[in-house]
Image: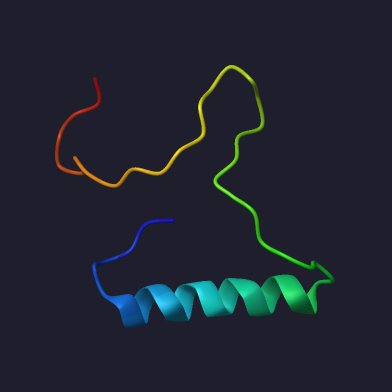
Length: 53
């Protein structure tokens, strides 16, 4: 999930995701995840403007 540095925006996006999940029968949100063991799941918290290494 990518967003601007604004807590209100983050809260609104997550609230919408929770509402969508709940209305479609899901009990919780989970992540980050990956669909294969060949990749590592994670969250980028720094270095957004640097090329991948």
